[in-house]
Image (cartoon, each protein chain N blue to C red):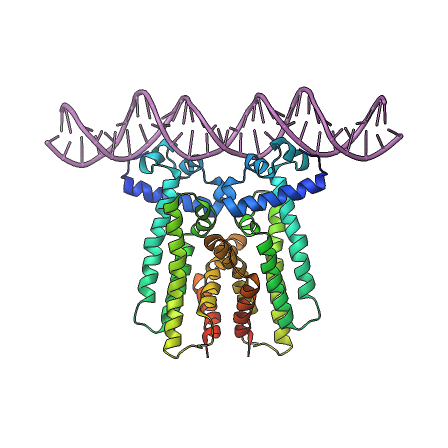
Length: 196
Length: 196
DNA sequence: TATGTAAGTAAGTATTTGCTTACAAAAGTA
DNA sequence: TACTTTTGTAAGCAAATACTTACTTACATA
């Protein structure tokens, strides 16, 4: 196999991990299977990551950077709450559609890991999402746009189920889902809850 | 160890499976680990089930009987749509709280299984839930109680995320969650969407 | 062109996996 | 009581697992 830099290989390996999880499930995520998917020897994987655990940790850290990072920018922008909520939701759905294995990875593998570092990062990812949604909703209420009689906490919780709804549909109906439509549809429902 | 009938042992084994999944995650669900949890030898497990797969299949069939069964009765009762929706949601949450490993099992293990029988049962469980919620909502619309401008399909999709939201909270925040409150809270939000 | 290093491989390692075997003992039944 | 069946065990099986080793090869740079 042609030689490549560690940076390139690391990206390939992480992508392959997510692909395997989405297509074949977590139980088929073995280093042997992984090497087959990439077309490189098993030993080579361990040139670029110290352990299988290390690959997963790296993926979760990517999530914080490539997913939570942009979400923070969206939530803290000076746009109207409704526009921010839409951006937040649509970006989330887009990200999860492009990284289809991530939802499963975070729930199943990562959440029951005894690696404290990994667990901490994971908790941070969930809590960040929740608090960013909460912030936008709170802004809308404060600005008098939305109903002040609803519990921000409860909507945030309902919101957190949306990405997983998406995942259920993807797995069971085989991935043919219009991300743009899905985002708009869910947004409509949320706005109905928020309206005065 | 004292002898017990296969029926009793099967229940114990299935319960232990769900406990392990909830506490330690799917990757720790080995037959060795399972035998340790029950306090019986590994060989004894295979007296009562033909394979590990067989245990999982049996659990999923329980879900259809003990969970989907009652849901059908609730959805088809002659109560008002709002009362039925509440019962449906609260029963779902109660069931998942009492069988905390099931959500994870259905998503991760079962959805990527190559056993056709299992996959079929699983698909049935998801689609049943969705169609029962849809039925209740449709009834409410037909009776002129709820808004006829909303998409039944979309609300059903949003609904399906609620049980998993619950699971996230349970795993990450350590299980201290008031089921009764959670049910009422989510119901409030759904009713807000449905109202005219 | 020579050389050091980073990136590749095949073939191991020890451990864990799901499951089987050969046998023991408890419990129902005659 | 005698005998059959059912439920239990300890020890071991082949295959799969994550990871290592000893060695090779491509490539940037002196």
